[in-house]
Length: 109
Image (cartoon, rainbow, N blue to C red):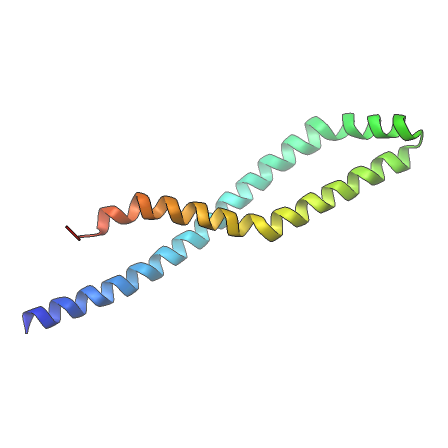
């Protein structure tokens, strides 16, 4: 009887632990992606944007074309980040959690 109860509790704990892992991965992914996007925006917009805009404007001889090309490039970069960044980040976080955090609570010996 005790073995049945222990196995039942262990089985429920494994299911509950997997749900906790999924929630933690989702939360950490969102926080990590928002942090990376903030850093990306600061670096790109304030350090590189003006020099690239003026270079393109000087090269084409027209400010509208230079700023337009840069706007299209930013739009494509953000589309790539929002489409593929979440999956890549979730894979990395899941791998890190499985290697460190979960081993603490796992009682397999």
